[in-house]
Amino acid sequence: MQLNTLIKVSNTRIELLFNKEGSEEEQLFKKLYDSNKFDLIEQICHMRMDLVNYQQRHLQVDTKRQIKPISHANNDDFYNCFYSTLKDTEDKWMQSLSDDEIKDYFENRIIDDSFKLINESSFGIFEDNKMIAFSVVRESHGPQNGNLWILGVHPKYRRLSIGSFLIDTMLNKLVENDYKTASLNVDLSNSPAYNLYKAKGFKEDWVKLAYVLKKEE
Image 1 (cartoon, helix red, strand yellow):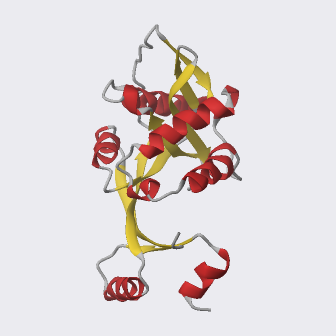
Image 2 (image 1 turned 60 degrees about the horizontal axis):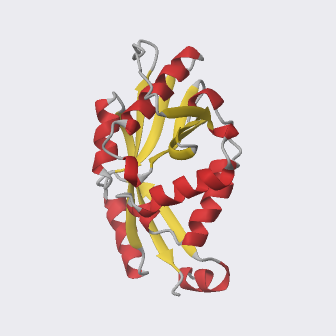
């Protein structure tokens, strides 16, 4: 079945991934996807960090804010913060999602997923009982590894070092619970996020290119 037929029959979008290696094979894939009107929407960079010799950071919580496990958060409040974060991001893949796709992603990949949630490193930050930031960390991408599924800060609370605080707290908790490594995926087009992770000690592992074909509305 041809790709354009597949999307007309049963899908709202088709996503295809392949390794970015600068090879002849990569160029052939690019020509194939371009000819079928796929768009390059993401350069997924997988980053890793060794925690064996990680020096935990001393953190001070703003007295106006509270930290709660993500598992204790109200789902509607969580979704509102999640939605606001995704609608104002430099991540091209997230920008490509429709409202229905954002809702589906939240319900089936953030709230409910087959990979075990690491409760100690998955938490929300609240101000006036409203979530303003969050981290979701799961056991995946190798043994004794905590993978940062997603991290977000509400647009109104950015540039206040909350993202840095989230990462440091996450790493501290992973070390306390005997995880040996940490990892995450970041879109290379999202330079603020990439630079923050790099400054925290994460290093590039591999890069994959993501192409998407969306059903015409």
